[in-house]
Image (cartoon, rainbow, N blue to C red; front, top):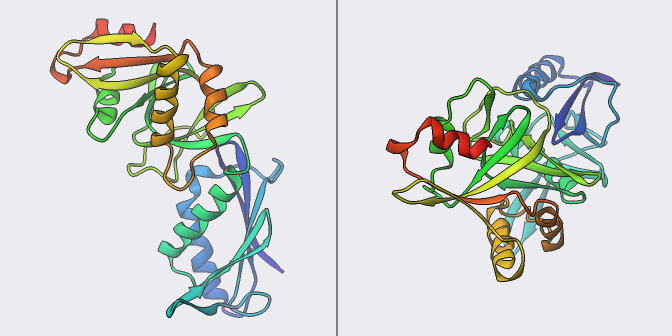
Length: 268
């Protein structure tokens, strides 16, 4: 029998998390409360269609942890696939294990769709997403800290989701997967511009050609920026670039010389 259900949304997909009753009522109650607290920013109402189900049982049938030996190394199984959209586990897993378990569930669904994770910082300006990408120390966190506008909102510092719905791409904050939690609405934003950050003494915004060798270099860069282990196919990224032919720019800036005029050039 079901003890509790909660529904969460990630990148617009709805996950139903079911906690089943067991003999150790106190432990089940404490575990469900901790998981509910962790996922609170992602919670949605129960009226939405469910894309993926996550189930938790006490450590009895139908789920039992198993030991498995692979090349003389011992592994403890704590997750079981019921089908392609349902995964189950036990209340005996730790919270760090829950993070790994939940991560597995999310990306197993995303990999089957036109959605991918990407290393980026992002700002919403008048309801549209402006993304800032680059290698480590390129200035992803710095640029979003410099932007000061009443119409802008910081969406993420490090990671986000990009999802194709129809012929349009939307950006979703990766609230659960961020290193630094930023309290923002868990909703989608139309992708407006994508900036590749470059270090330079002079401020400069330059449009990036998306055809020929420049386009292939851009695809290679985007593949490198997708989350390790969850890379989308090159074709998915190629379609993303094609639908945003006029949206890619190089952005060079220097922290101490960033001005309101420069900010306007980013959002124009």
